[in-house]
Image (cartoon, rainbow, N blue to C red):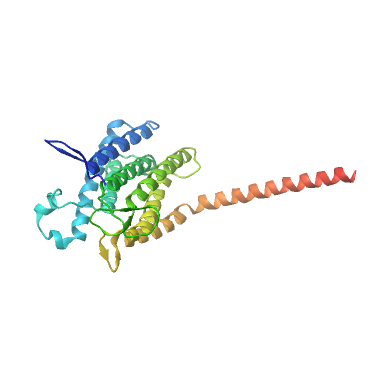
Length: 280
């Protein structure tokens, strides 16, 4: 692992910090490229981006402090001094970021469902790069395993799961899928807001699967906090998706059934014609 990328005489450059900067840069770039497809002004988009990041950092920190209250207490200095007392809840950050963005664009009378469709690919890209940085820096360590894809960490016994690497690769794949979904929405193959539902459903599914493989996690009722919240969100967004898109799903199923019947009739007609030719 490489926690320090460059150890200069004056300053140390940390690997995790470099990848967070890359996540912000490339996420912002993809966000800008996506919104070039719309009539939105650049200042509106980037104002919303910085407001959402600020809201995400604030709520993410609040979540982390609340979940680890025994380490922070009521000390405002421990809350502010993130270098000395590090930690930000990923779920707190995402909830804070999306709520802040929703409030901002709602005040500007901008369709938030359509906006989220363009934001989600950039969010997945930033998450993927951030998780790759966590893997290379060794800041996230998985549980012990005999699996082929594993790694030994200095000072720890046994091989460990590459949880942050798994998440990084999966989120980059999700970036590609959500980008494809964006253009499907633009062609009216899916309803507006589909990417938002896809994000929370997919994100909670991945965290539900991978969280049990991690070691450094907040335990609540015998389970990891992220695991419990992921289970609730996965069930919730599955039900919301089915309810919200029920008419759309039924229409697609009817269309698929109609196409199958139509193709079946064509096959039957072709067979019938061949039999007539043979008999003649």
